[in-house]
Structures are given as structure tokens and as C-alpha cells.
Length: 131
Image 1 (tube, rainbow, N blue to C red):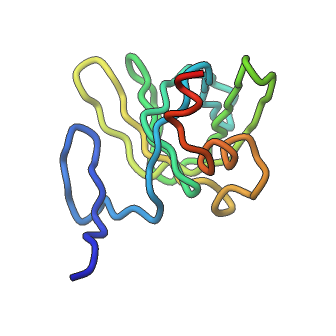
Image 2 (cartoon, rainbow, N blue to C red; image 1 turned 60 degrees about the vertical axis):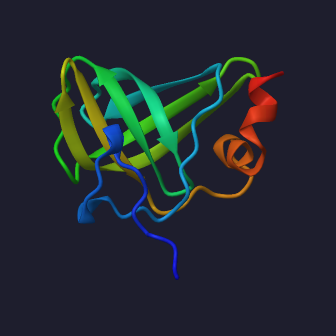
Image 3 (spheres, rainbow, N blue to C red; image 1 turned 120 degrees about the horizontal axis):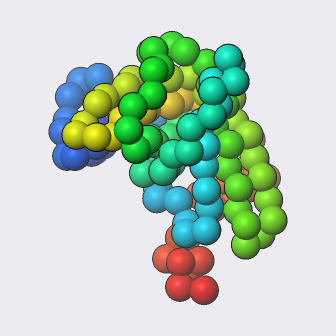
């Protein structure tokens, strides 16, 4: 029997629109993220999960974004003194309570080997969390 291609969606929902291309991971502590629109708006976000091809982020409060809109997801690891900016495309936006959940797909494709995030995805996250 083959593995179910549907991964868990935010809040445990599953649907045909939630096909994931890559295994999702949580982001290590100490890594902050923000979302920049091409018009220059900046919003601090929490990355709920991350893969080589995209991420799901939560913004406290609202933010006006449309599916297919291009944005830049910025990451900073203060512990390692590393920064990374990843051009992304908004896949979906969901308002939940007082938060906005945003699904992103990295452009032009999966993360390149050797980036800060690629290194996180290659190592067991539990080891880094305990250090």
C-alpha cells in the first residue's frame, strides 16, 4: 500500500487542495521570520512548518495577501548570525480567529543545497533544540 500523499493541514484539516510535495518540519528555536510584499509591507510571522519547497506561516492579526501574490520570506538565525531571503508565492490564505495562516511555495523551486534552511532540514531538529 502506498503512503497517503496528504499531509496534515493547519488544525488537522485534510483536503485535496493540501497535497504536499515535501515532508514538513518545524523551525528550530531562535530563528525569526518576516514576510515582505513587493510593495514594501513588512509583517513578522511565525513559521509553523517548513519544507524544501515551501512553508506555512501565521501572522497575528490580519494581512492583505492574495493567492499567487509574490512575497519574500526572510529568515534570521541570531544564534548562527545567518540571514536568508526566499522569494515565494502565496498559495492560500486562511483567517482563523485573530490569526492569518498563509501557505507559501518557494520560487523558483526547492531550496538550494547549502542554504541555512537546507542545513536545518538535513539535521535532526531534536538535537539542535536540546543544545
